[in-house]
Length: 496
Ligand SMILES: Cc1cc2nc3c(=O)[nH]c(=O)nc-3n(C[C@H](O)[C@H](O)[C@H](O)COP(=O)(O)OP(=O)(O)OC[C@H]3O[C@@H](n4cnc5c(N)ncnc54)[C@H](O)[C@@H]3O)c2cc1C
Image 1 (cartoon, rainbow, N blue to C red):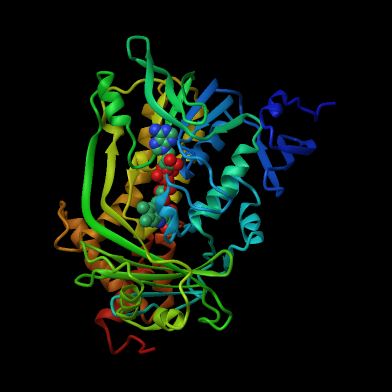
Image 2: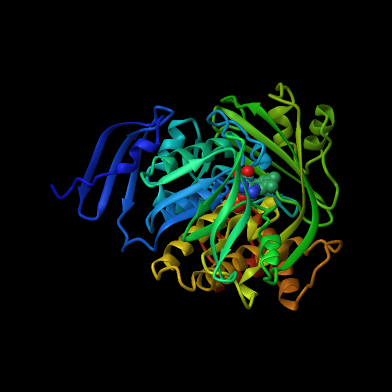
């Protein structure tokens, strides 16, 4: 029967209980699994042109690694993910992703890409209690440059989901793929070179579950081990020049606390965001999350971090330019002590500039570039990079790194330029301020002032920060006119 495809590797998932198999319709496979949490996932796998190789290894099973593995599953016979952590109870935090305890915003572009690779993920998440944010303007209040933006119908949706819930769902989806295996408690120690170091042919890892070191050979190794990636050191050891590292120091600190969400808390709104403008260094966010919770984060630039004792944290919330978040939490009991996180610098590794890079090896996600978290770009950029990897793999493995790093650097440029450009609006942040950056920072400030009165201007900004529209769209003549009108033509401008 043409629709039935044998899956000899099912036996490698002892915890999985597969109760219904494959329906093949044209080129789409729809697989129904009972996966370990007894949730049903629908996984649609678009058949690709054919395997780029037999075996691939991914280092790190966080968001970038999981997305890469999902894409690679279409191009390799087998994908093995190695993660040094032990996976926690579903929806719980884990050691290797300490940022999981803090506000994580999933930008609309990232959610759309995820939905392509994991159809039905959004409804699966809302089924687990995540909050569907119908409109990022109408249902979220944005405060910038002294006032709230005017709200309107933006057409940008979103999802309020905690990082652990999101990561667990994605991990279960990936582990349910027939040709992907995720191994926990396995720390990669080094790369194994071949052909006089011209190619990476595998890795050596320590399996703390078995207390043993093992070697794993592969056609492609992908480093998704995050900001602390050892790739530069591993490459240097093999005689390669390490990549140039660009750092923009911002000394950002997050302090986060969770609360129960009650129906009478800011009805109709799923979040409030206070963005910081120089000379203010503090920003604040309240966002609806799964399990009827609010996550509240106070961020502080340049060492101005919020206290981690609860009275101090509450006072920091109270000190925000407007009292909305304070009014929500002042009489509530926090669900835990406030948790801190320090993020010293935006950090970008320019692998695309290297004259030589071994075949059979790639770096992506935060290992390539990690951004000031206040812009919420990391997971979306990782999703876009996974998309780029998907298309690069269509042309096989030879020269993959050159093709991939070129595409990835263009994706990163988009996010980096806006994040770093905005960070450079603080005179204390060290970095090169081109004429363009100075002009853009001036323009964005005027944009926010206009957005206080004009929802269309606010929505243009929200589309760009959600990465569903390119930055030049904020300079559409219609938007420029509105910005001029509200900043420089007060007699014509409305006074809403
Ligand atoms: C405070 C904070 C808030 C953030 N908020 C947002 C947000 O709102 N929205 C957003 O999109 N992004 C946000 N980010 C960024 C986001 O968390 C990352 O971009 C995202 O997790 C993708 O990172 P990654 O998978 O590349 O690396 P990571 O998430 O750091 O994961 C790396 C993984 O590799 C594993 N690992 C490391 N070394 C090894 C090894 N040698 N062998 C095996 N495994 C290894 C680690 O255990 C870990 O699981 C935030 C970051 C921070 C710090």
